[in-house]
Length: 190
Image 1 (spheres, rainbow, N blue to C red):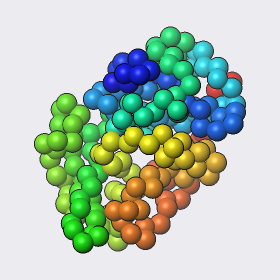
Image 2 (cartoon, one colour):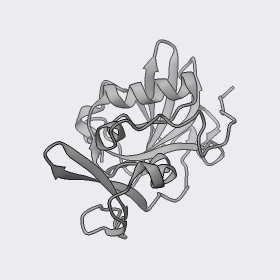
Image 3 (cartoon, helix red, strand yellow):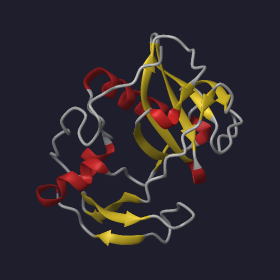
Image 4 (cartoon, one colour):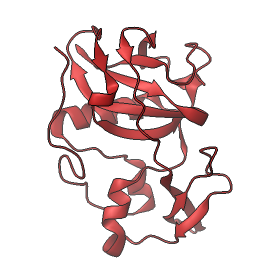
């Protein structure tokens, strides 16, 4: 859980991703944070029901490193938290040695842990598994607020929802097209 900001499961936080650009995220189980397809130029969120806002991605976060990204913790007041199911299928990075990397497709445990996760498909190949790579998040912990901010900025500017870490695992992989696998409608609070 987010110790410095005092977040607990289902608390919602406001993230500042650029000048006059704010979005929301919600702390979920076992260090997983859910990010949403909602952005606006002011930090005013009363009445937003996150069940009506599409999710962008769910990732494990290192709470102690996100303070520079989080503007304020809303808790559960003023915003209705999402009850969307947490995805149980993720990518697990594989380091094969000598600069060779890849990923396996895994199913998280019932406690939302990648430790002890079952392998669904080993050794994904971008030539045959591109859709799987595009649609699933890496199970590693993200602790760099700048990388999360960059990903959100890119999405809200271009519609491309992409984790740059995948490029390290799959050399030469192309970015997905805008809004790949998602609704093309972006929700903005009034």
